[in-house]
Image 1: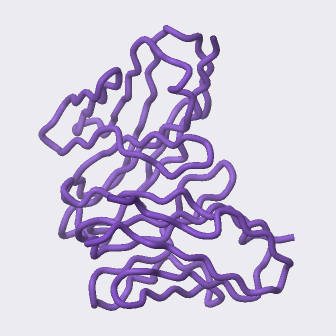
Image 2: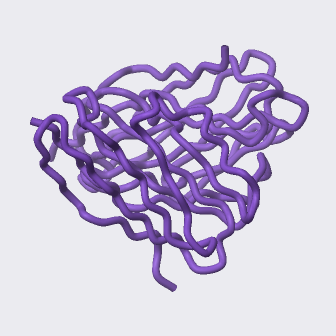
Length: 116
Length: 117
């Protein structure tokens, strides 16, 4: 069964600090992995998308890494801001040939709270 | 252009009533998806439409749930005889096409928060 697990479930940090969120997945065959940011009361917004051959991708203060061998990804947030408070969701897509072709498997998300 | 819009933003209904949730996708997007997000849970796939193809209904939790997409654009998700466990945020997303390619980025609407009392 395709699964995506994220840790920690929630995280509280002080403004200006860095943090790293983790994602482990069992989706197969793997196509790509996305990190989304979901503000309270809003729909998810894509931060990064990585394919099998990509190890790291940055979007401003967000840097995602991918280890396709261990099926792990991380999202690193640098110099956190109050506006970073949100749920961060790891999403994995299966590639053609699998029964879940194109379908996205969502993690439960990590709720990040940034305090001043 | 405008993003994905959903209406209503909030819906409170009594157990046993039917509800209709609406989604307006981004113009030109041929693929449309419905998801459900229960409190503390990840997004759960419900149904997907791609062009004129038969929809993938594999995620619908029961026969009380149905969806249609008229004219390849607006979609309506209908829940009949609502139950308290149907309470959740219902998210709609659209994309240029269907597939695993990163080109087919899904853009999400703000969701409809459904509360069944």
